[in-house]
Image (cartoon, rainbow over all chains, first blue to last red):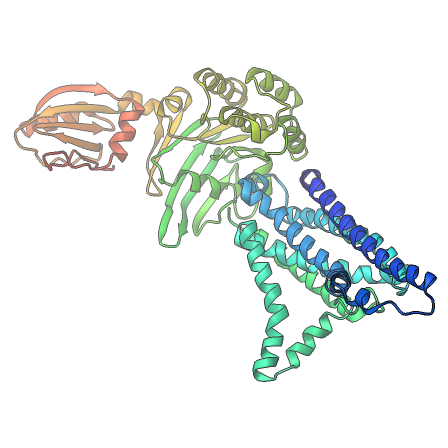
Length: 259
Length: 307
């Protein structure tokens, strides 16, 4: 029954995220297609002449390259991070925020069902959203002559497990903290620490073991890898293990959680 | 089968240094209406939450319907209807959807009772819960608890937001539809008149400990307020003395039984007995839990003496 309720509460949010993911992807795809066509148009009419430098380095081009570098190639990871954080915190956080946790936990049934249902609904939404974002990227990849759609599809599982790991982190911290804002803050702090601490250690004390380890875990999902590099089993299994670890932590925590 | 619906021994729940429930002993007979009374912060809601597994006890034991709260929580929840203090359910769902959600958990769920109570309590079944008034939210909470076929109803502040007509209806429904069927009602409330109207038993809790647990009939038949006058207050000691209230040269003694013997003892100590009166539940409650408040003159207004 909680599955029905969780989907009832999540469906509008999932639809909104799908729309947002599609919109951003389509907007970017159109933008890049325009840029690519511009070159095609120039080469059609002036095959012997190069595109004047002003067109290569004007503001429009700078923005486009910036978007290429930071938005699109990060697109999957950004969506995975944001949806993971949001869906993870909102599911259990909604019950805390509304004061309905005591009602939920006084329905007869093992408490683990509550966590497992949250995960089922959250991860289903996550997979739908992350799969949806692949489609607006197809025209982009075609435009820039990157590897084909098969490469995108091969990159999706890595994004799914990254999203699941972030979802697990967000769900667990919200469960522990007892509120969505606190859970989100803890999750963001954890992610930032994960991302920046190895770099800081490398800069300050020239210890690069942690940096190398973190870089290894991000193979296959970092911007310079996905969706242009082959599927990475090691990193994908690592993030899957992280996700399962957080699920186990949430299941253990809910057993003893007081409301 | 255990003849107690709720039985706690030395139940304790601490929050840091605060002893919210401190060695609580409760015996709630099956088929009774038990009024669980106490001031704000006395430990009523903490007790209820502990019985339902929302809080984990630090010490002691508790059985609900014969099931241990640490071992058999699911069995307890299947048989217990609960109306929480905060009256908060899923805001996005209508009462009809909440019924749909809830019925899946309870094999003894009664659709007939849903129709009956929805009409009787005039519940707007198609309005989202978040848009309902406090009174209607309380009604929906009762609807869900009353229709699940529970053997025990734990109602925390059950009449919050209800008008007198619906309150009257609710009390009648509890007695006529549920207690008459052998079910138990555990009523945690501040509304002494409501408790006095339907309860068989009362338990008064203060600072996490039970001060008094008795049949309401016992209070009606045996508890008496003895008003007496004297120039000086003699030292009185009796196992039946519940509380003493002082005002100038007058004393009011609340005694649990043998009022005539107690009055004779007062007379022997030189006091003049003005009257011996039967007492209400409210007078017993206040006698046990009233705070010592200095009068304007600086003298203490009351001196609670627990039994």
